[in-house]
Length: 216
Image 1 (cartoon, rainbow, N blue to C red):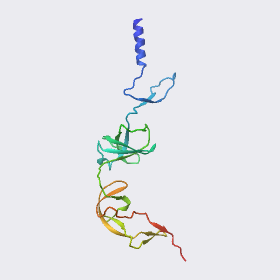
Image 2 (image 1 turned 120 degrees about the vertical axis):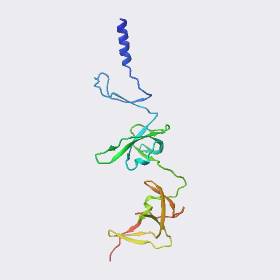
Image 3 (image 1 turned 90 degrees about the horizontal axis):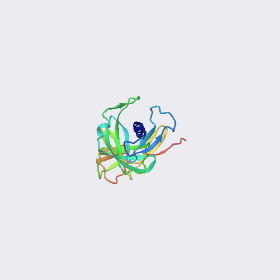
Image 4 (image 1 turned 45 degrees about the horizontal axis):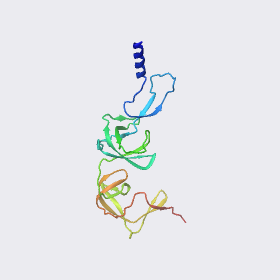
């Protein structure tokens, strides 16, 4: 009888599931009485910490290093910007069916990331370099010719320039060309090291006043 009691106690102990870490049950894939077939039954998540796996193109991966700060925005939390840091860079590349090569980069979110939930869609910006008091212009304001960079600075005393393209005419504001030396950049802005001053107005490409000429 004593042996039977011990066996029953052992069976009872084995029937108790214990999570390997403090967690919250996120889903249960089986009902009481259904046969278990060796598949996952319960999913658990740790809501005290989150991470994001980000695919980084092979052309950019050399700029990414563990410890770099990250800015994260979530579709589900508009207006909220969440901080994080790069914790791991996969040593092995992943090649897609389209032929692109990427590396999986793991980003750990800061502990005070209120409102974040598993499965949310995120936009991640990794800060690979940073500089304070930089003079910035929109990327579309910088043009190149013969390997040199320049911008068009608005000239309020000049005459607008008429440009005709595809049967439509457009007016480009009067401007003067000014050579610039550029520094750091991202997808939106470019740092100008020399050639411009704070307050200078520059023209942005494709932003013009247009009209359709009439024949007669």
